[in-house]
Length: 149
Image (cartoon, rainbow, N blue to C red; front, top):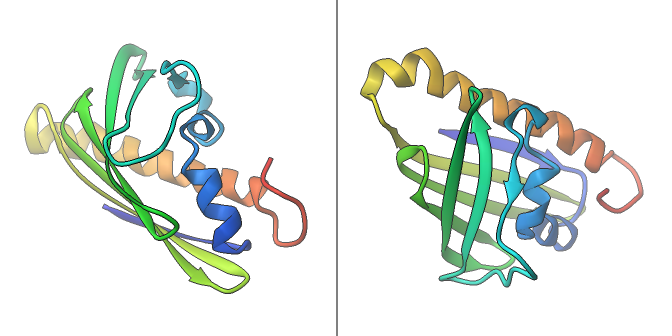
């Protein structure tokens, strides 16, 4: 699955915001009750591990992520070590376009329960999350002025 967003800020503003794991709480729908569990400062680098808690369709889930690639300011990748998916690899890429940044999320995932569960629930849920994020990005990064909120 691939989602793209053009953000009206230069990459040197955008990349630090998205590479801060704690900002995930700001861009995740409140229905998911997403919380970063890793204590203290999180140093983003290849090999970093981050723990989260969230609810999926009301069920509590713990998620452990490995930062499997770290190439600032171009891209980073997180891989689920433990969580609700059989596989989840999420690449975050940032293309510098001067005063704007093209952010591209590429997610490769496999679900427990196979194609039927994917079609009936998971695909829709993942698309809703990325749709929500697009709305939040418009608020966090309005077309003119200001730093991310």
